[in-house]
Length: 437
Image 1: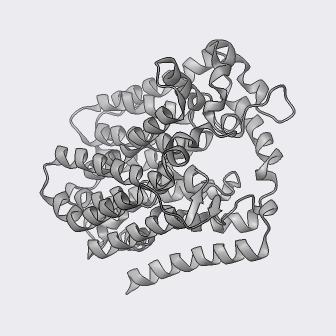
Image 2 (image 1 turned 90 degrees about the vertical axis):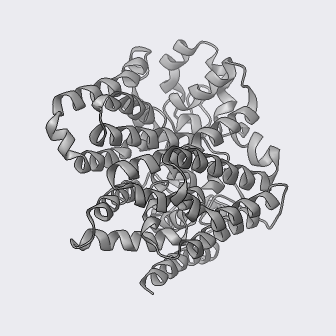
């Protein structure tokens, strides 16, 4: 019953955000069409509908048993494939153009600036001069709101011949779906394999898939997740050399999104959980981690991009736009309703059990370690919320934090019932809302 109470409380939070958002505020105040998410409330079906239902049914029916029986590497591959199938089918409910190819070509998105990077070094040197509204040729909202590694990714795809929104969408979905495997690797390394296997179907079928197809934040989430996964291997596995590529990805993460510096909370939890290895080889571990971490910042700094100056200008740009209009008093809790929508009611129940694992020293060590990892991701999300720099659109912005939370569902009994709830929520969202991302 306590699990059901937690799920019911999460559902009530969403209902409150919907009712208060629709009745006490206007569109010009919230700047979202279907509060608390960005989109248009419109029932619809599409070519992805049958596939989405079939994928959901297959994962519910066979996911828990396959997660137990498959060899570990086969499970990782199967989880990645199933996550891609789930994301693709949900995206195609809106059709190819609206659901995939057109997402990253709108006026706010990264593909609108590809032609402005014809001279990449010169563009990087000049990047900060176009962040604030009122400057010469200001960047579109998403380019202005992120460090240049985000738009540069799509510039490089264009340069190798993968041009246009279709290829950009394929990139984000394919890479983004790997976040599922990265989280599994981290959970296995830091907690145990049994919990990772129990979490696998929930990581695959997370409602976050609605926004992972197609959003660049899905790609960001995967990069951050692999940074954490490799660090987990460095502090628990046979070789500390994993710390070097982990640091490299952490550095890239910070140059994909300013807010993803908060992934440091998850990294700190990994270091705490792997403190035995940290104590055994601290010099080698931190030398490799910091060496990797320095690569991307050094490259962009030498190219002429000043991260700190850009962030200062971003804050100005944020309050020039919707950030200066959206009420903090609503979004500081409505953002959490968005988190319920991307992680699902099962995750609310799982987080309740994770909290219990932290508070009860009699629980197994593996349970406690998983609870610490999940709590770190939740803490990062809450800090982002309180900062006031994430008012709305958190259904996509918080994907890098949210992908960790369904791992808490490993604590739940009767997984098929909870998986069904996850699938139904995702299907309802994607069929009732034309999402903005």
